[in-house]
Length: 124
Image 1 (tube, one colour):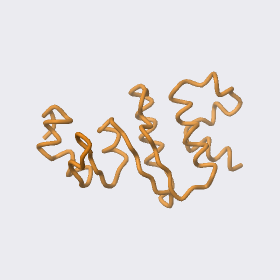
Image 2 (cartoon, helix red, strand yellow):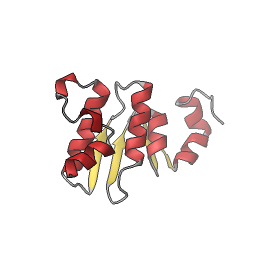
Image 3 (cartoon, rainbow, N blue to C red):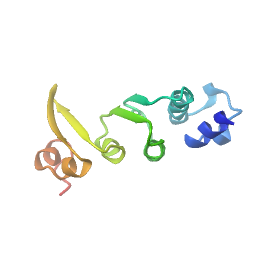
Image 4 (tube, rainbow, N blue to C red):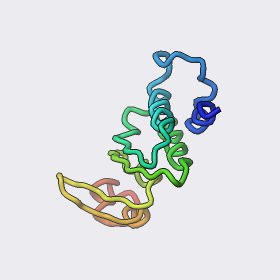
C-alpha cells in the first residue's frame, strides 16, 4: 500500500511492473524521488533534479516537488532557474562561486541584476 502511494505521488503508478532499465531518463529521475520518499525522510537534498529532462518532464518534476508533503523539507541545487523559482519558498543564488542574491522567488525574478544575468533581461 505504501509503495502504491509513493508511485502515485511521483506519477509512476502505470509503470509499477516495468523494469527500471526500460524507463525513460525522466521516469528514472521520478523513481529516484520515490526511493527517497520510501525512506520516510524529514529532509531531502535534490542535486540538479531537472538536468537532462525534457520540458514535459520538467513540468512533471515541478508538480511532484510542489506536491511533496509539507512535513518533508528539501534543498534543491538547480541550474534551471525557472524550475528553482517554481518549487522554492526561498532562493539563495550563487554566481562565480559566491552568494549573489537571496529572497523569495518573486523577489529573485523581479531583481534587475538577476534578469540581466540569468534571464537575459526578458522579464520585468
